[in-house]
Picture 1 (cartoon, rainbow, N blue to C red):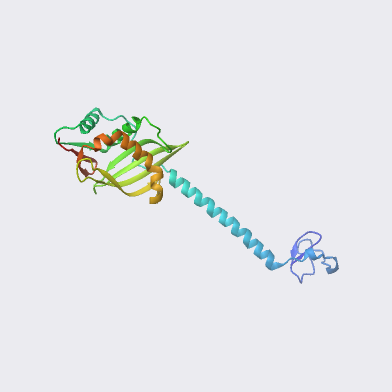
Picture 2: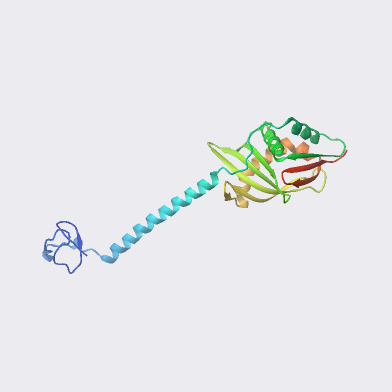
Length: 229
């Protein structure tokens, strides 16, 4: 390409007149810098466009991940106080006595679990747990939505777990899947967002767990059986 020394317009090598200003292109007036390597220019343009596209794709990807992770998932129960009847049943479950079963609804379990978080006297850790929503599913699993504060952000981790209880005091929740917002959470990252909940649960709910001998899950409710003395 020939660059016109007067107006800077790029012209073909065989051009006689500048297509920009119309002046005649005199070869003896052209400097070496006015001769542009077409292939080099094209490769530079391609590299520039590639960098722009890569930047746009990366920005979009970051936005998708951020929005997906912080998306407020549905199914969260409001932080209402546990009904007196639910509190009474839970207190009876914690105390040893004759064999007896207690049924809790989604709302009861959510309010009781959140109530236990608030009763924890130690450091809540990071992220700091604020609320637990419990959903008992028709397939026998339990869906937990763990809401926690990370500085000024609220994270919602959804767990689907299967209760396993082979005898008194053996109740465990086997996690089947996990999501952070709308994003599936790799197994290796789950402990970072759930360990604080486990620590608090063990501290505040261990007495009740020690008495549970059987669990039956149905849609919207769970029946917990207290083992006899």
